[in-house]
Image (cartoon, rainbow, N blue to C red; front, top):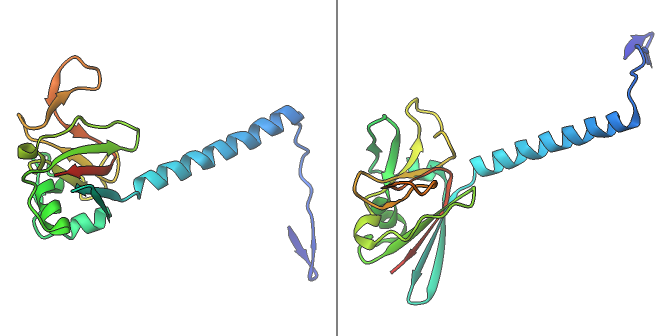
Length: 175
C-alpha cells in the first residue's frame, strides 16, 4: 500500500502466473506446515500425566517440566543433563515411596515401555533439562535408567538395554 495525500491506493506488481492446481497445492502446503508446527508445539509443552492406581481407584496428577525442575532433589547425569528420580516424583507428588508399585511409561509417538518392577521403578530419572541448560532433545521429558535396571528389548528387538524413552507423556503406576 502506498499512502498518497491521506488515501490508500493499491500498487500493482507483476501478475503471478499460477494454475488453479498450483494455487491449491500451495494453500494445502501452508496448512500442512501450520498443522505440523502446532503438533510439535503441543507435544513439546505437554505435561507429564501421572496415573496412580491403588485399590481400584485411579488418581491423576499432571506435572510440567517446570514443576519437575522445581523439585528439591535434582540429579545430574553423566552427559550433564538434569532430572529428578521417579522415586522423588512419587514421594513428592503422591506422598509415598515407589516400593510395591510397578509402572509403565508412555511416549508421544505411541511407544510404551514394558512393565517396570517395583524394585527398579524408582531408579529411573525423568530428564527435564538438557546438557546446555535448555530443553531436552526429543521432548519435554525423557526417562533414563542406569545400566542393569529396567532392562527391556530395544525398539528394533535385537538387544536388551536399560529403558531410555524420549517424549514421555504418561506414567501409570499400580500398587
